[in-house]
Image 1 (cartoon, rainbow, N blue to C red):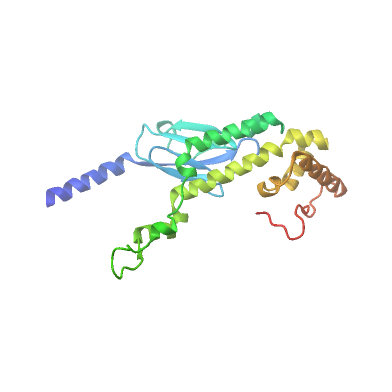
Image 2: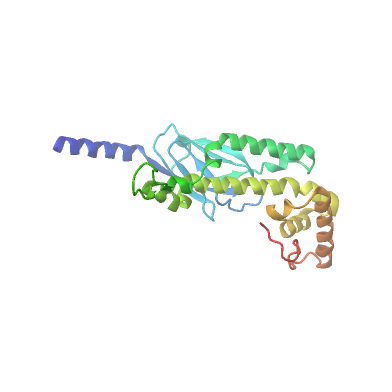
Length: 256
């Protein structure tokens, strides 16, 4: 018994000795603002940035590679052995600017990027919790007095679904996909051509009147242009100052 306990202890110590925790902070290269809720992956596990853009990831192999991949920014990777023992700050470059103005080409690029990511993360995108019929099983018609049974394992999975790592990653990927779709249609080139704004004025306009994905889905290209023009009138009337958000929905409509 003692030799077995000694062996287990030695294996545990070796595993701890080989593991290390790296830390980093992700910021937008242009604005310097922290990049929130981004996924960082390695062969050892997965981590997410918090509201300050900070993350910590446990690495068990020195040959491991740290990878950062999201729709809104260019991919980044670095060998764990080159990371260093300090909190490394990573400047992420925006990738959607490569899409250019909202044209058929830009839409195709977005679709291509989206399909490529869905193919790469197919397992995560297709993640789902147990179905009702997988939790509650109907009694057998051949067994007298049989009653409906409950699969406790499946019930537990259903209850803890939102705490599952794959579920959290799925929600992040879906959010990034939707936000990238908005950025592809409601982009700086298109708004600059229509509004003739530039610099900080254009940035303020885009930030204030950026529609949600749910609202944008209801707008045709023509309606989007009209929305931009109407918003421009309000923007000019306010002198570029903050005003109430424009009413995008009709009475009784919902964003969903």
